[in-house]
Amino acid sequence: MYENASNATILMLLHTAVYPFLAALIVSVVAGRWLHASPYLGYLGGFIVGLSLIHSGLSFPPSQAIDYYNITALAGIASVLCLTMMKQSTLRNIINSVLFALSFYLLLNPVLQHSGLIASLSWAVGSAIVVLLYQVLSEKIQGSIQQQVRSKHNLNLPPLLLLIGLIIVAGSAAPVISIGGSLLIGQLLGAFGAAVFGYVIISYLTKTLQNHTSIPALLILGGLITQSHVLADIPLGVMLMLAASSFVTPISILLSPKMNSKQSIVIIAIQIIISGLISGLSLWLVWPASSLY
Image: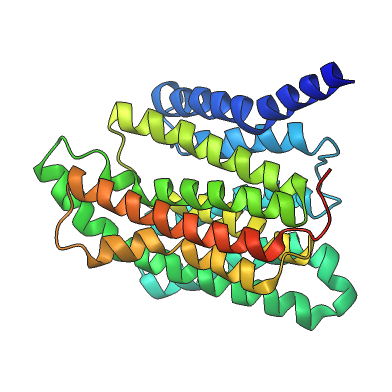
């Protein structure tokens, strides 16, 4: 019995962390070096690998709420292309708002449809506004970061801060959601964090500088956090605290007078501390009254 439990734990660890991490490394290198495509596709590929291993019933076309993360990944790619290729900011924001709302609508509607169309649309629009706000913040800070990186070629950590912040948020949210309501979503948060971490390593080593790479990641992370409330009954207050923690890094960057490696480490530390405090409070709020065993 204990041997079976040990094997199941090892298998869960492989599916949740190891395989998504390795897949992200491989896809990032292949996409960036040989296919001349955007290497941020690496973490999307790594997450999809983790999703297919953790959610054994994954299907395309989607039939369940979890299946729609395939569509979320495509919406994230379309959003980045829109931000990169279109110059008119108002039109970009309108198109991205539609893409964000569509992503959340598809992720949440399979459950919310029982509450009516208004409930599904309200959640989709509200979630899209949050992601759009994050996008606006990221656009404000990335210009100054790029300028300093070009003037000092050794500064390859600041452009990755947004993604590092999202990794920390995912890591702090995973135990809360796993214990509070859904081991499946908790595992997917782990797979997401591992996949993005793999991409960050490749980008740091190759000094790859790309714009808007955090938007697809935020769409996936936002979907997981909102689904934890809608699908797994995580309290709304906990969900809002976890979502708010995603803004710690962009706001910290915005308030920093200058960016360098030392300041980047300070910002990472701030994100870790705040996410840790939120995670601790959230665990206290969701901890089951009866024993877990």
